[in-house]
Image 1 (cartoon, rainbow, N blue to C red):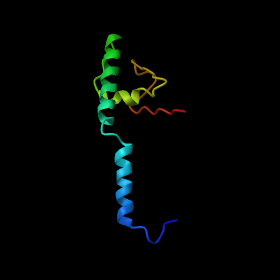
Image 2 (cartoon, rainbow, N blue to C red):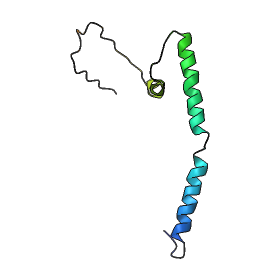
Image 3 (cartoon, rainbow, N blue to C red):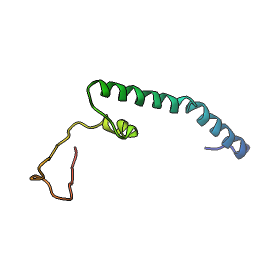
Image 4 (spheres, rainbow, N blue to C red):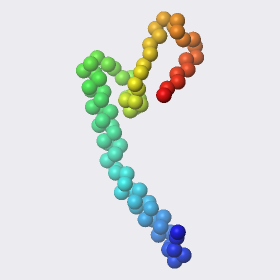
Length: 82
């Protein structure tokens, strides 16, 4: 419940200050360093990534199915995950 005497402009200002403190300016740099480190580890295992931003998503993959011959799939592949 808001106090009627509380200034809305001051509340917005404090909210923006809180967000600025919570999200550190170094966060993008930390993410970039993590991606570079992951790419180097993969290269040692002779795994080459053509899209570095996809590494964050790839870390969540638990199962990957290859169908080289196309006998199991058609043009439209539909994956269902649990």
